[in-house]
Image 1 (cartoon, rainbow over the protein chains, first blue to last red):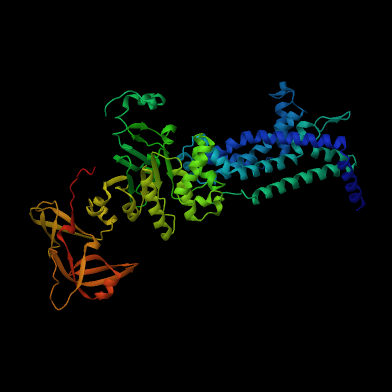
Image 2: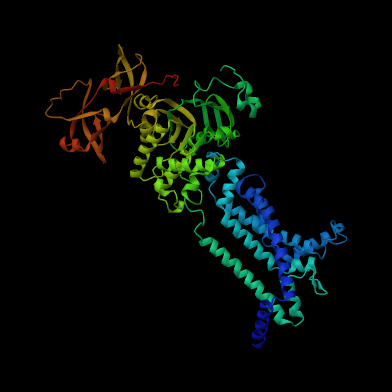
Amino acid sequence: MEIFTQSIAEAIRLVASFDRYVFQVMGLSLKVSGSAVLIGLVIGLPLGMWLGLSRFRGRGILVALVNTGLGLPPVVVGLFVMMMISRKGPLGFLSLLYTPSAMVIAQVILATPYITAITMSAVGSIPREVRLQAVGLGASRFQALMVVVKEARLSIMTAVIAGFGAVISEVGAVMMVGGNISAGGENKTRVLTTAIVQEARMGHFETAMAFGLILLAMAFAAVFLLSRLQEGPRGGWVKS
Amino acid sequence: MTPVEPTVDARTQPEAAERVAAPPALAPALEATALVRSYGGVRVVDIDRLKVETGEMLAVLGPNGAGKSTLFRLLALLEPPDSGSISHFGKPVSHRDLAARRRTATVFQRPFLFQGKVHSNVSYGLRLRRLPRAEIRERVARALELAGVAGLAKADVRRLSGGEAQRAALARALVLEPDILFLDEPSSNLDPGLRRRFRDDLRRIVEQSGTTAILITHDRTEAMSLAHRIVLMKQGRVVQQGPAEEVYSRPRDAFVADYMGVETIWPGRVEREVDGLCTVRVSGTHVVEAVADARTGEEVGVAVRPEDVVIARATEGEPPATSARNRWCGAVVSVRMSGPLADVWIDLDGLLLHAVVTRPSVVELGIEPGARVFASVKATAVHLLTDREEGYD
């Protein structure tokens, strides 16, 4: 059991001493996954609202596609993005392979279905009359949609946090397209998950554990934030 | 329709410029012409013409599935009709006309308050209209006061009772000082006790504000107690429209009579008509006299409102002294108490007559199943339903 106690103690020391390497890796993780979720929100929110609020031919197929997207294996997404941006791929001219941008692209593909699916069911559960009521008080079509977003904001925040949780903890896609590169004291594309793989493989359990603790702390913070939001004074859509 | 100079509205609706109608002062608050809306091949709304005068309250009455709510959404410009036109104060309007929509306000059956405080709900429409903050504050306070929820401005909407929530929804519409107020079953979600108070307040508020109001309801009591005029709908079409009192006392056909609470409708034939007094033979055996506009030989429905039937206990053959032209003797079939009144069904040797009497009368007269009673109805209280197609405008 010594291996645990020792590495945890060392991990805490690394985090507490603001170790430059550890914080560079953490910073890149936040940056990549944060950007991916923001872009995912820009795509997923309108898409989810459209799928949740309108009825049209072929909607069922799109909904099924989005739900399938929830189970996409990150490593396969990584492979797909890698082939797209590799030198021989259709987007090869952009020279994106092994850059943070490539990692963001892969994670956008992973995060968007989460945000779309949750937004879709959230706005779909808000009575149609809420929108009609807003229109009936003089809202434009857009303003009425904003009322729906506002009524569903809690679920949409859940969607963002769920999407963030999914991408910050995935290793397959960022490993494929980012390459886990950290050279000459400069971190290029190493994030928390790939760093854990790397450090553990090299026998640096205490460093790996430090990254693991940070990931856990982030997951905990997300869940904590979520539950606070849900029980907060301005919670769900209750009054009918 | 006299063409006049294009107005402000014509600028946003170039194609409407030609059709701009008479000056607003003379135009009805709302007019709908040839309005049709279908869902899945079924014509849910099919209205030739509907008119609401400025300042009046119109009730659109009808059973579930009559198309009232669809008509409501069309008239309130919440959704477009398949065909037909709507004008507000003489100007053609559509659901795309935001300026026209902003001169109206709606209250639905359920309050649908937005998350947050009552005051932020009430200020919503004013914020959309970008009014100055001070004015918003002042008008919100006034509307809350008017709707009787002044003390709840800072309350979270989730803490409100059903009645409070509906009053908040009413305040949210009233605060806009709309030219036309649309109300879709505003009281049917409330408890019976609350409902009456809400209606009384609603009538007072609408009268005070002088706004034109359109009320959708399936409840004839609500329509009668609130509206100046009633439009009765059935399967998407208008069956009768006119002053509330007229629709109530002079139903156009058996459906209207039944919906307005007449359960006694006997088929008969006019035998004689002298100076407006008709003698009608009902099922060969009975004779009913009615002051009505019918022709000799015409097949009619004889409608008698239950409250127009006067009941007396039959004592040893001697009929009671009454000036009523119609006097029948019969046996009570059933008595059903409902609050202060009782419904009584009397068998007049084969014809069933429905009467309403007060609870004390039931006791005093000893009205119980099997009891022999005299029932009398004035000729002026008998209404004849004819099949003739008449203009009902």
